[in-house]
Image 1 (cartoon, rainbow, N blue to C red):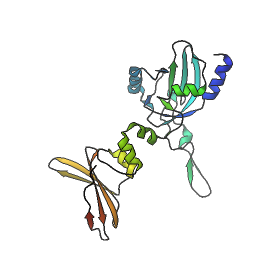
Image 2 (cartoon, rainbow, N blue to C red):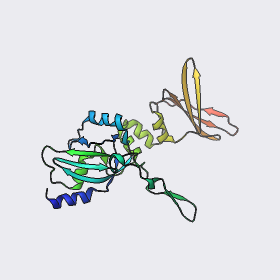
Image 3 (tube, rainbow, N blue to C red):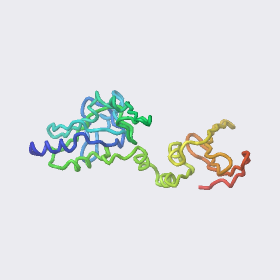
Image 4 (cartoon, rainbow, N blue to C red):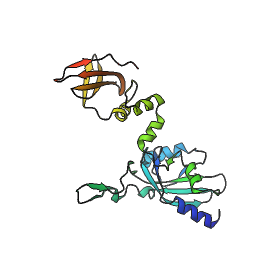
Length: 242
């Protein structure tokens, strides 16, 4: 790669934003990552224990420097181990209407820290476009800036994803899935019988349709729909079979 090609690549990659597709640890030494998608899991795990996370699943990160080091292309993320969420991400600007906007805010949460990633090649860094290098980083960073919710939906069973898209709750879902499907419940009730503790999430208020979602150990075991008349009288329908 010629000096001109290197300079162009740095211009194209520097300051680019992406979302983390897995937990990325903070590290003083660049975290090794190979174009095949493989990485040194022990190095990453040790760095996570020692320094904590630089980015969690769905966090927004930025490439703040690109360096050529032998057969490595090193990406500084969020200004390295000493960087991370910047002060302006907490500043609000209010207009005449009195509504405040947080600078740097988006649907993604800014990552709590910084780190370095090193794309390691068998020989020299090959001549490729910025987009091609982004594709190599895709198992770690998504440069389409997809939200944490979209990344999460990609990882769950298709039957749960389809139910969430229909705003429907089915047995086997966990609480995070239910929140994505129905939002926060109107009420929560805990029950303890014969040594077993369950929790009911109730959606809706009388008059109208009410949905009861029962959890055991964090997973949905029962979904019931009822109709509540004025005054709170509830006529239950048959339990939903999934």
